[in-house]
Length: 176
Image (cartoon, rainbow, N blue to C red; front, side, top):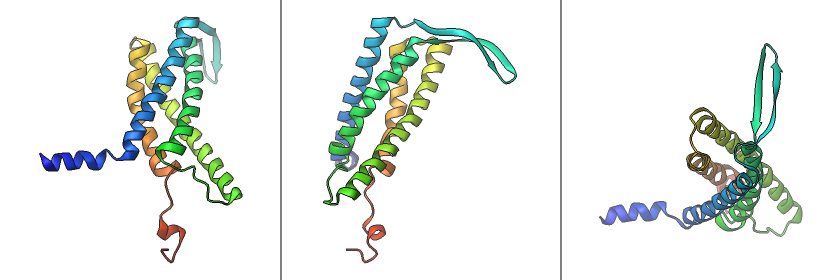
């Protein structure tokens, strides 16, 4: 039993616990905005319906309100996640004293974070489309399923790409 607890403790680092806490809060922000807009405007409100001509394919299509509600929820949640992930979870917002370097680092992190989250959004839309529009799963349960996948993908993007701390041997050949 002792080795099992040691393994749990080795996985549940401060960073992972904070990521989960702020991930839950980010998800809550996303849900509140998404469901609030859904309730305000109706979950099956059609924003656009018409005929599409795409190269050799012609067909009718419609865009339901949930797609716009999800974009708004996404933008609000990602802004919240960026601030909390950068400054609290990964502590990657510390000043180096070099304003130019700090601004460049902030710009790099911002672009990478939003780019990674756009990839996540595409993954989420794929999952939501299949679950809601093809399988008829209720909106709320579809969001839960998509969020499980997205949270895992986002952690790896943040940990290993966006907020990764440079290795000392890569930053300083002398190792100091």
